[in-house]
Image 1 (cartoon, rainbow, N blue to C red):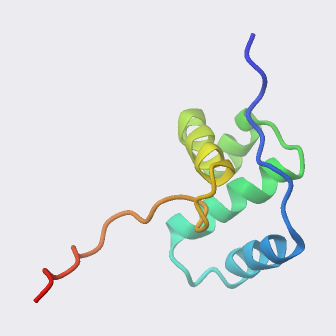
Image 2: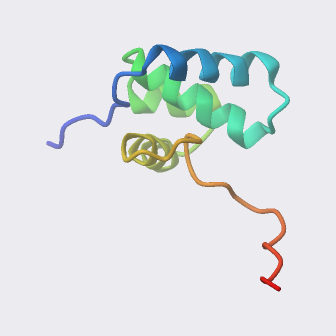
Length: 88
């Protein structure tokens, strides 16, 4: 059986930033959910419980944790939005 996926230890600054995102809730629902996933994982909550907490698939939770552990500073890649304009 594979080792459970878990977010790496958060720095104080990362923890404060994630708390701000979750508490304010004005950064968009995707970003808030990603912050909740990272905070829950870093505190020891297992993937199935996190998935139920944020109403997401377990694979999605694992993907967010893996991206965070690999250094994605925004708790995952940005999704959607307009493409950048071409260089002039």
